[in-house]
Image (cartoon, rainbow, N blue to C red; front, top):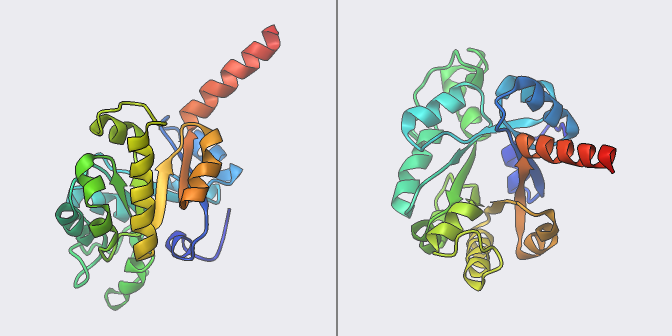
Length: 239
């Protein structure tokens, strides 16, 4: 889905966006998925060639990892494993150049237009970077409202597997405690004008999630799609 507006602008405007995780590490798979019309995928150049928008989830939220993802051209960063508003408040400073943040100023990078943006104009780069914080622990859930209130946080993104394990109900997505957690995240986002996001395992759950207010949806991965397609094709051939 190509558009003149940035991904962040679309999130802030309240659009419902559909994304896909890329876990195969294949630029060809990334481009195929991008051309299918997903809004959020990775492997940056292949994704952009396919007409979609790349967002990166680094292994952890350190300054150098986030800065490297942005310098390589990520339109946003999914920051994992933060358990408190204090940790989030520090991490979002890594998304912006000084004085708004502490991102390293290296302008001859893909993320800064390979040197085409002047030092005095870096604010325009800051304004288009999407900040996504994962909610995947009891600690982050307890501080969801405080996290949503932080400037620079655009999306609170639920990691269902980690969150249910943290809640002591591993993989039990119909448990009341998990459903209440989703409502807590959605309410925090609504109160502060953020987008509620989630990774979806079962597409049958999508209508209910939309009703709760979730509109930043990760609906699987390229590996899962290939696996499902391969199984279905073989079953049909044998059938």
